[in-house]
Length: 328
Ligand code: ATP
Image (cartoon, rainbow, N blue to C red; front, side, top):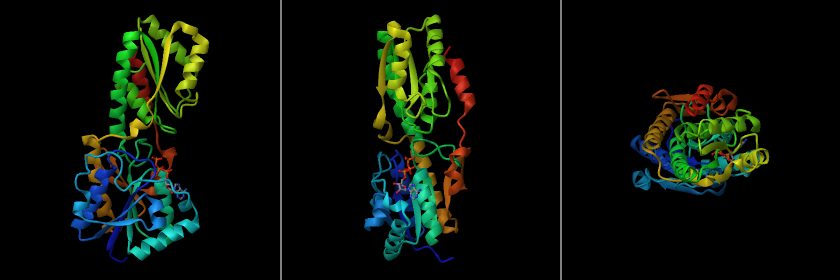
């Protein structure tokens, strides 16, 4: 094993609050350890275009509190091809980058794993995605901030729902993962939560809403993950209206991209700092193709191929049951 001299760091896939805190931790840990650090702009796109910037400790000043990513992010189709990855590797080699820290989600790690295997370049992944859908960590960076953003919005919606006696369907992010929806449902006291992982029919939902009316509820909030099998909040609202007519005053709110933005919470900043520090240290002791994760309160490493295997990820059914009990 040759000693690592120059580490490249990049963010890729969807942006998540706390990515900047992770970049800062990676860069400063690397500098502290005597390594040269390079920021790769726009993830794999930057590898194709030699969009590299040399970074020092001061390059990452004043970013720990910022949402988004100063290294930018992009979706890069070319990198999915063997030819694209060959070009990426040649450009990394020309720049002298001999190890990588990849900050992103499962797509980012799939690409990192392939590049590392094909060209024997060490890589450590840091989970930066609001979806919290990776195995090997209890929390991904950005998830806590997104939950707080969602709950702030739901509290505001509840004010108007209660004032007008309305039924609100609120759609939150989560194409394949109901983590945000479930968390928002519990913390926001939602009457029902619809998730991609669970088939909840419209009749079940209506039963729950009517039960609420029987218990003298005058307004209700239903949280729907965007990947719910009924087809999102507008479709659910349409089906409920078809069956119930005007007995409920129904409104729909799609929270959309505002869930990705904003200043990271203290939790996400600390998590990102711990993971960035751990990622560089892992590289320097010869680890590769692993992802940093938080299990309990310990930072652990998990093989990338396990981390990206969604079948290992399980939604906490007991929380769903609890949410049901607490909203009678
Ligand atoms: P998020 O969970 O926020 O969507 P992500 O990392 O999963 O983040 P993707 O867009 O799926 O986001 O992936 C980011 C980039 O990783 C892609 O644009 C592509 O360049 C690369 N990538 C994804 N899948 C593959 C693959 N199968 N092979 C090679 N590269 C890939």
